[in-house]
Image 1 (tube, one colour):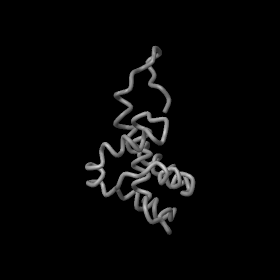
Image 2: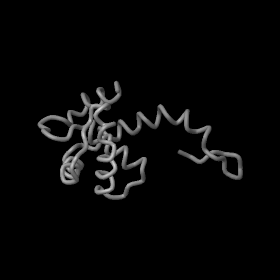
Image 3: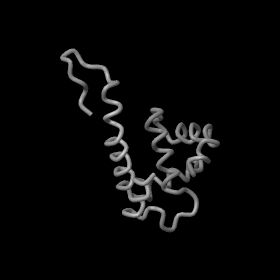
Image 4: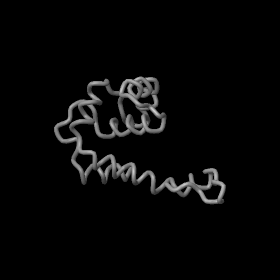
Length: 109
């Protein structure tokens, strides 16, 4: 994840962090976004159900309170940059799969 490393260097969000790395937090937030989870408990439960897969990504599941603290304390700019990077890279692959509206145009992203 070269983009993750560059965003991490630009926004030193892991300085002084002992438990939940920015990478683990990002993957939890990404899981929550893609799964449509609306509460931290849903995100934490879902992430814990995939803890073996997280190991292979170099991340760890978090407790609800730890994730809540990290969401409150970390600068959101690093996550905004990472989500934008993913969006820019993936939009070209996703756009042809989107249904066209009645006028033949794809929905605005």
